[in-house]
Image 1 (cartoon, rainbow, N blue to C red):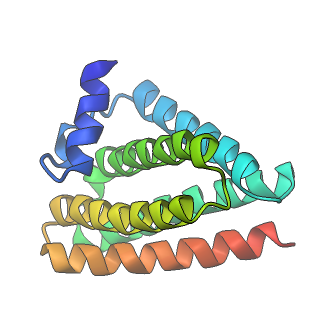
Image 2: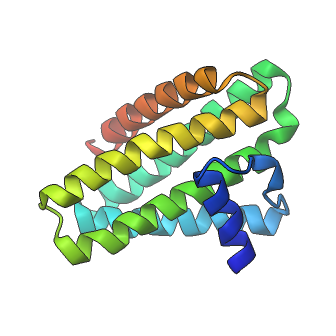
Length: 165
């Protein structure tokens, strides 16, 4: 388990790319399920939303990120890199979610420390996703970050809209 966490941690530190992530279907499925559960648990803990709203938001955000990543890779002609790319994104997101999950019980949800840390983790995650897209799509880091920012924005908008209905 430690080597797998090290792979994701090194991607989060921009030391390694998504090409090192295992792409076995059981591993990919496991990362997706763990990320979904972690996102759900943090959403329940950190918001006033109902369980259905949190579940909807989590599923829509993950599906949107996966669909946009698949579209971007298809446009560049490297759709074969999708399993490693999406696993790297969801694995890194899992680590970011776990950081938030550890922080909230320590300092509380309404604490300025939590708000600032959440904002910093969001910026960090956009940079990491941009780096992953840069490596997967053979584009510049700047283009990867711009794509990542656009994906994050659309994901937040769609997840928010879906969970408010």
